Image 1 (spheres, rainbow, N blue to C red):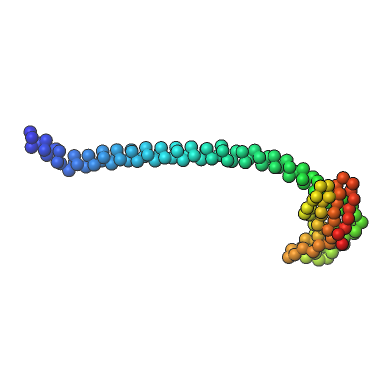
Image 2 (tube, rainbow, N blue to C red):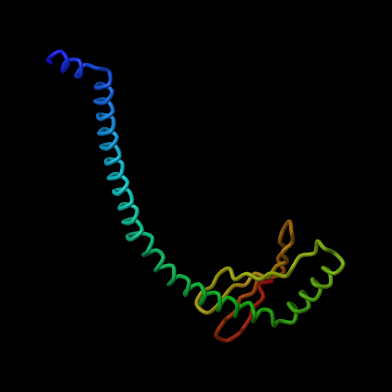
Amino acid sequence: MITTLFRLHSSPDLDSLNSNIYCQNTASVTLSYKLTRMKIQIGAILLVLVLCVIPCYASSKVVARNDSTKQAVDDKAIAIVCQRKEIKQWIRELNAARKTNRNAGKAAFDVVDHKGNVYTVHVFENRADHTATFNWYEVDIKTGKVNAQF
């Protein structure tokens, strides 16, 4: 009987069974450790989202309102410049040139600066390979007064 027990204990089947149990326990502990670590990482990601991304998103909505207001004022400054006779003539000439020359540029306007109610508008031809300045204008949004820079 002792010999049989000894054989059972030292048999290859029992060793492999013990080995399998050990591997399963180790795998279970490893899996448990990985799951715990994953939960911590997910928690950290959620914390970052709550602390960083959501407040940034909320503040971007405020910025978007400010940007749309700025865009409206910029559009107003450009509209005032576009009412000038020389601008209307220049746009007609550019459009006529584009009918015969595909490389002719398009009229472009950009508000580059402002000080108080006075906005600086850059009027230029936008071509495929470069830009060509037509003029710079200072526009007083309140009064509608326009001063050409050259």
